[in-house]
Amino acid sequence: MTAILTPAPPLPADEVLLGGEWKPGRGEVLTPTDPATGRALGTIHAASVEQVDEAVRRGIAAAHDAGWRGLLPHERARYLTRVAALIDRDADSLAALQTANTGKTLAETRALVSSAAGTFRYVAAALETLEEAVTPSRGAYLTMTAHEPIGVVGAITPWNSPIASEAQKLAPALAAGNAVILKPAEWTPLIALALGRLVEEAGLPPGLLSVLPGRGSVIGESIVRHPLVGKVSFTGGTATGRAIGRIAADKIMPVTLELGGKSPTIVFADADIEHALAGVMFGIFSSSGQSCIAGSRLFVQRPVYDGFVAQLVARTRRLRVGPGTDPTTQVAPLVSTAHRDRVARYVDLARSEGARVLCGGTAPDGPEFADGAYYLPTVLAGLDNQARTCQEEIFGPVVVVLPFDTEDDLVAGANDTAYGLACGIWSQDYKRIWRVAHAIDAGTVWVNTYKQFSASTPFSGAKESGLGTEKGREGIRSYTRQKSIYLGLNDTPLPWANP
Image (cartoon, rainbow, N blue to C red; front, side):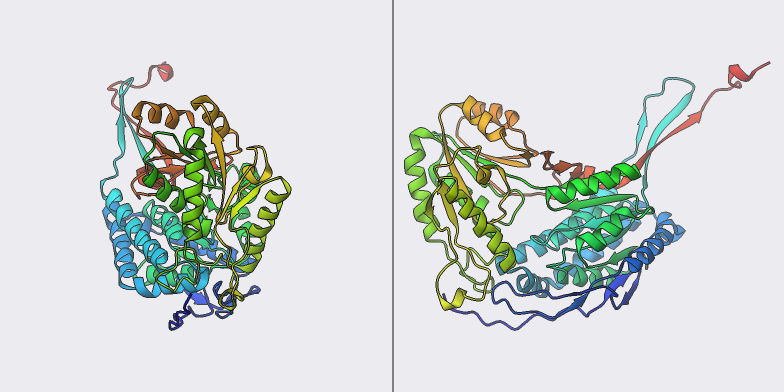
């Protein structure tokens, strides 16, 4: 591997966006690092709990201001379109900043930046054509439904795909007419702060967006518990999602929770092997496995199991591990050494459970890797689906391969997990595909492809993978309250009150 020297991207100023004003954060000091080198990128002061309250109160005022609340949908859409154009304008610097803070390859961060711009653009277009409904009347009245903003929404985003995750929450929440308090992950706050400046540049009325970095247990919890926050949208771990759900239950507050996964990818004996190999590898090893929908359990039908696994291992060994700034890199460092060590402990657990490590299973050797959070892409075999390694989310470049015989065996094994986020099926038999796609407990099923997304297509999870829907037109509606309106058409007074 050759070290790639690139100029450091400009870092956002050490300020938080507080209801339309950039101010010094009054919380603890955060130190974002470059996962490829372990070097600190700078310091960012987190927001304080008091600043959360100030941001929420400014958001309430902004959301209820007639200058925003009274805008027609196509007028709000103009702001979103401007944000999309500004993201496109600054795409290179945003991608470089994200690579520096997350370790991801530039190819991936460029795609995430493009996705963010596309999300704002799609939501603007969808908002232009979003319709209310006139419902069938059952009396002397006209009935219709209207969707109104909630008020202030808390958006809590993860560290693995910043900017795309932020856009997925910000765009529909703003489109629906809300103010948003954005809390990025404490490891990766830089891209959210940069995005905040672009939203401000787009002319969004002051107070509608706050960006408050900090720890989830401090700033995140303060946002969720605040009595004036009317909804929370969270992407992250299932344990945190449960904690948010408990608070939401006490507040009677709606939530959207996009949580963990242990997604099955399934290779039937009749699959196109070349397509399946490429899809399986992309599904687990792209993003260095740091993806909620990573295909981390691989079920292969027994007649092709040995040959498929042998080819998978051979090709996995050839994957290029390196810094995200190297254009030849396929597997970049994990987000931090702490997370890399967590992944390594899971592989050690797999060994103790009886797994055979077919490739990987360690950090790469060499001085060029010594200071970074690198881990080799890993293939494990020999485990039963009940093993912890097969049941718990590892969130790294680790896949467990499991043979299966019949379709019934496959469905039972694939569904034998607490999660239900995604699934991949590789087969040429469309009748079988149809049966299995419907039989698997998952919010998204990919057939002869994997890890493809569309801003127009709803995304959700089953079981412990979450609640609610993101993306698509339904994603905008999820940030509204539905109201029914009855218009009386009767010519005489209601008979009950007549003398």
